[in-house]
Length: 190
Image (tube, rainbow, N blue to C red; front, side):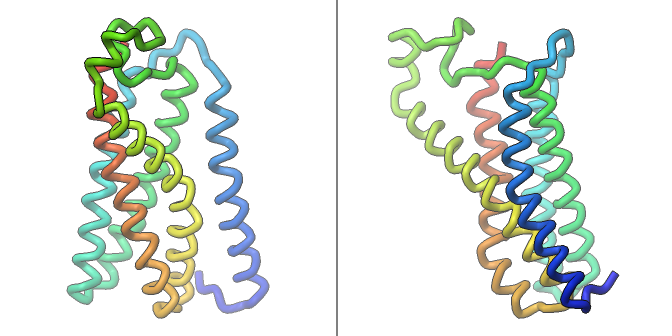
């Protein structure tokens, strides 16, 4: 589908803006929903793998475009979009069916005692800085990636390249930091 009509382009831009607002709000609302009796505790390891695969496919997409292979680049980007969507669905499902895990909560009491805090030391600061930047940038990356994709779809490769300078490193950071966050929090899962 080629977007050439100004009204079509305007509709797609509105859709991107809407998705950029609705997705984070929906995730926040769904975090408040708790579904009991469903065990999806296996999902974090799966969506960590999905994040790793997203990072790999993003790097492959860059390689392909540098080699001049636009079709393979397009395929890798579309696969990265699919993986990111799959991650988001699994992430929300996990948090709807499982209690939040507190970083450093060795005894799974739901709070950190003085021994747990001492054992964590400066790693807690590193973890929370990484987690917060991951969350904030995962919200910011939605419109960046969608607009970057739109420019390519429209054949406006000048804008596409300009937006890619921001979208690519942020998307890659979100994917890689998601894997690191998983490895840091996984010892504390109940």
